[in-house]
Image 1 (cartoon, rainbow, N blue to C red):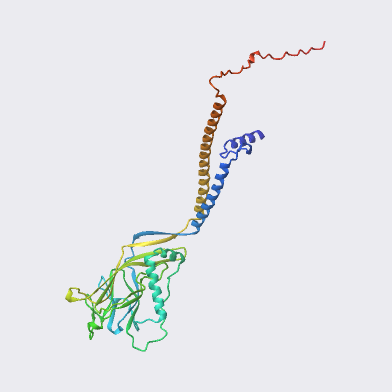
Image 2 (cartoon, rainbow, N blue to C red; image 1 turned 45 degrees about the vertical axis):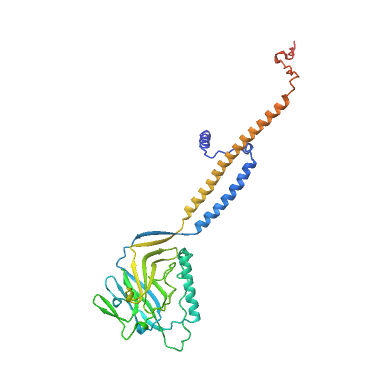
Length: 391
């Protein structure tokens, strides 16, 4: 029984893939110690970097067709125009010829174009921030998505006092739930009147000198509030001295699904191009003065997903990093040590040959005789001692 157990233990020992070398045969060198120090430092740095990468999360962006064609599109608007509310009208018309009568309505509020110091400071901060984010820091949405922060700015402060002159501007604000198709939201002179296949704006008792489409965009977005969305038009202000100015904003709306570790939301992003020109029929520049937002829907939507490695993936990467550094450093150490041994041996051989040449070099006039060698055959062994056996 014990013999069989001994055989089993011996068989298991022969299968050992990690043979141990006795410390008596281990030669510790300065090269090995140097490589060990560098290896430990590199492993510590990579372990810290891998841990930091694991604790952080990443955003994955994917494009796929937008199949929600029957859904409604929410438009959030807050625009101030430097004309009285009785002189302008706001309306939206989509590609199906359905106007705002079939959607929700917007509120028109008489106000003053001049802002209070608190309101001006707020609007200038919003304008500067949006301009900075568009031009300098395009990745701010990633930080906002991860932090789940809805927006970078608050609402416009309320006016604390009223000027001593009548309101000279109109604030158009509210939300519209329109069809998810291309459309045109516009603010122009006169109130809108629905007619077959569209609508018209009637501006009775108004002349061209009464027009002033200087405007300020406090809010222009699509969908509900969502973290990480920067709306390019918010904080935009256009001031003109020409009464017959036409402002056009061409907006491309992209549906966006956001799924982070903290929340899940459906919203919209948009890009915009703006164009402005004065209306002068005598010079061939035809059109209607006003403010036009022409939007169109993208056929693709963006899916933003916040991902993070599992603990198992983190441990596998950590083990692979440590093991790879150990193997690589050992290989490099062996190569360097072998190269050093080769160079040292060649240098030692050169020194020995140089020494031998200096010891055997004699003048040509002196004959050199080799010493007599010892003939081992002439050396006799001592006689053996005969030990007498006792009688």
